[in-house]
Length: 222
Image 1 (cartoon, rainbow, N blue to C red):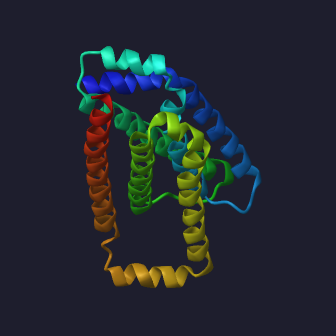
Image 2: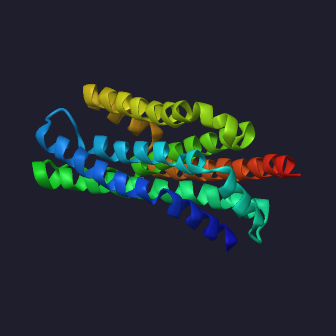
C-alpha cells in the first residue's frame, strides 16, 4: 500500500522525535521512582500525551520543496493523506507502548501492584486518535503554511486537555474509590464493551477525517 511509503517518509523526516519520546519515557520513569504522588496510570497517560503532541511534527517540518517532491510521486491524494494519518496512528501505538512500559517499570521499581486496565487503554487510545484526527484536520483545512503560525498552540492544547482531564478523572477515582466502584457496577460490568465501542467510533472519526482532508487537499492542488 502506497500510503505506507508516505508514513515512512514522515518517519524519516521526524525520527528524532521517536528518540526524544524514548528519552522522555526514561525521565518519567526516574521521576515516578522518587515521587510518592504518582501512579502507574500517570506514566501511561503521559506516554499517550507525548504521542498526541509529537504527532503534528510532520506539518512543522514540511517545506515547499518537500511538498513539491511528494506531489511528483506516483500516488493519489488519498494515499498521501492516509499515509500522514497512519504516521499519527503508529506514533500513538508507540506512545501507548512507552506508557505501558513506564507503568510496568513503575511496578517493578516501587513494588506497588498497580496495572493499567484494558478499558483505560481503550479509552486512552480512542481519545488520542480523535485528538490527532482533529489536529490533522486543522492543518489540512486551514493550510500548513497558515497553520504553522499556530503550530505550538495546536500541538499543545489537545494534548494538555487530554492529560489534565485524565489526571482529574484519576484524582476523583482515588478520592472516592467506592463511588467509582458503584458507577462501574451500575454500568453492569460492560466497561470493556464500552471501551471497544469508543475505539470503533474513534476509527470511524479518523476515516471521516481522512476523506474530508483528501477532498480539501484535492481542491487546493487543482
